[in-house]
Image (cartoon, rainbow, N blue to C red; front, side):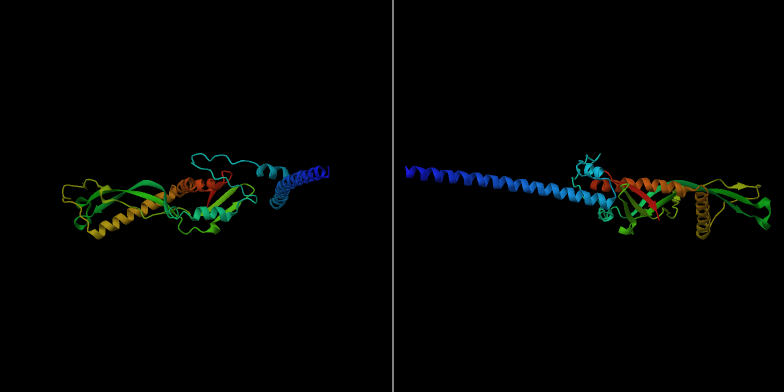
Length: 258
């Protein structure tokens, strides 16, 4: 009888030991998850305090899932509890050296008509002749992004706007291809003004330079620079907004000129 009681006692002790181990394991698991939840609560309250946000909005943002970015093959899920910093976006933008170059953002065809007059004998009108020359060129505006630095990229966490400050568009030297120069017929006052008008290379260069100066004046009068700025904003946004969206689709790019 004593043996039986001893066996029962040992069995009971083993069962109690197993039960105690199970309770201890579940207690450790429970404490682990409770610790995570408490940590998240503390971090959420701290984040709300640091960013001046409502606790409800902070909790909502904490558990909101990122939606897929349109026209992108992959959206990286990486919610940062403390939000993003300007350096995050600066690294993404400045890291793409291929795009940090001189961009052609706007172009416009432009022309000017020069009048050549060749005075005749004793500068008498009867011996004078003239000719129209039409110069057709192309005005190209560029923005040089090669000097962009992290200081040119700022972040407004409240509005979720990343501002990128870039140089204003610059008018490149106007190019007038020789095949786009049109020479009109020589006009004569009388039959005494015979022969063609011939220019030396120096005179041709002088006339072309004058035509380019008139083209530039025309561009300034028509305020073409403003059109170039609008085009530059659009071009730069198309290049760098996908980089911003690659970090988070909630952030938008704004382009400003220095």
